[in-house]
Structure formats: structure tokens, C-alpha cells
Length: 134
Image (tube, rainbow, N blue to C red; front, side, top):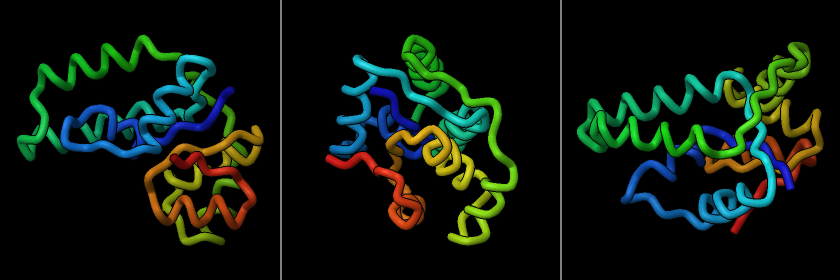
């Protein structure tokens, strides 16, 4: 079953000190379905990794290994967001446009959303978008 994967949950897989049941569920669902992501996910994940390299939380080689691992997963970019809906969701729920992009994909495709972001979870619930939980 497909679902929308956000960067907060993806990053959880990269760090040994993070263990969240929702991340484990999303990872296990990758074996039976595709994760759908907005195009910004590529940048979002890499930004999280580089910021954490600077903090000494992950090494450059661990980042490279993680990105190689990610490249082997079934992650499908969604390249056609509905701009009006993204802006509406951002304004209506006081989300960043980046977070609203994840919600827009989930809503438009009627897919569950996998996120650890509390504000995004609240907005998804208000928009009647299923949030994956463990």
C-alpha cells in the first residue's frame, strides 16, 4: 500500500539514537508499497543530513551510506502539486509551504501520511487525511 513519506520520518531512519514506532511501520510498509514524496523531499532529507553532519551527529560517510540505502527504496516523486491547494493548506493550518506540500500530495492522492511533525499531523487530521501511527 502506498503512502506519503515526509522528511522528518525519513530522517529518523538515518540516526541510531532515534527509534520511533511510526518510522518502523513506515519502513516495513516500504516492502509492500511505494512511498510518494513531493519533489522537495530530496532537498529536505539532504538538508537534515548536512545540518546533522555539522552538529557531529552523523558523519559524511554515514550520510553517503544512508543516501545509497534510500536510493534502493521505492520512493516515487510527485512532480505536479496543486499550487492553490498547497497555499490554502499552508495558510489555513499555519504550516510552512514545505509541510503543506506533503499534506497536499496525501490529500490529492488519498494516501496516508507518514510524518513525525506534530503540526502536520494536526493539519492532516483536520483535513481528514489518514496519519500513519504505530
